Length: 492
Image (tube, rainbow, N blue to C red; front, side, top):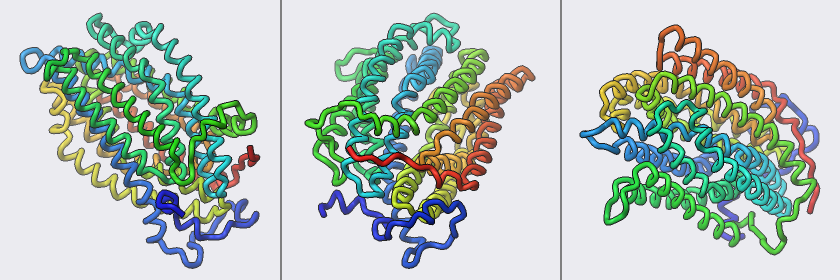
């Protein structure tokens, strides 16, 4: 066994396959199997989570630096330009994420299936899923890019842009992003596959390099340093696309060479495979519906906030960007939960699936408390790094208290939902998203803003959404029904 293959081994690999009774038992004992200790599980979780955490953390830090540089356009002499730039970039966020829905959702199917095939040691089927996922992402993204490029301006205006200067900047930024969208889609599919087998370290490496490239080109192109043109917001977008291209080249090189379990065999082609596409869509379509509903709710929410004016929306965008940093803990541990739960169910070990999810949640909770304290005590200082406008710093500092309060609930929710997706239980998460993001958040935001709470009202609504979502996700997990989800297992 080579070094790459050994790095993918977990405690699960030394346990025998479970029998049919174990694979259908909803109520599994909380006791660990003989010879397995809690420390063994924590090692497996950390092995997958730490590269994901570093990767996601650095990615978000690069995004924050990006936003800080954008917010610094105009400098102290004309901070209003920075406010317009922040608002412009913020207006592109939801349309961009909406167009990512197709391949992000199908990648949920890629992760769940490959994790199961890894648990069953079915390498041929896992590689078939990889090829089918890349084929789907490529086709879907090309169609979305064309539509997005054509309708970029109407999308930005629909998002609530009221100033022509902001609209022009936002359209420019979005169209440049779309030019590099296909590399983002294909890289995300490769990342989903690698994480499914527990190889999060490789993903960390190529995304780390991409972030460094992004930050360097930000410095060169936003302000026009070392003889490069001063492109402002457009420069920030070009820098992001350049970094994404570098990540794609590195990811493609890795997967063609093989990582010990996965290998992209180009000679086998990308012909549609009915059974595997059926498995992928069975998991991916509910995830796509979830993503569409979530993005619809987020767009309604963002439009409601945008109605408060450019400065309020810029403040909101800064706080959302900082909150995204707090997602990193939950998302990193969710990667562990998704991979290990999927592999456990593939091995018919529902006891291990439950144990891995429980231990992952415990670890995530401790990190969430540290983040909560950081945001509570230093929130205003962090906000000030984006823009020196006093009103933005004051309001943003108070909103960071909401962000701090949500940390433990938000992190637990991410991890449990990651476990559910690893099991292929995407329908329940779609229903929960419908209730919380599409209905609760926009409705409550509109009510609280109308009552005169302003931007604070929007964040009260966001808190209500997160708290209710945590309760519903935990209730679904406790039911144990996710352990009974099956996939069709047919070889190529």
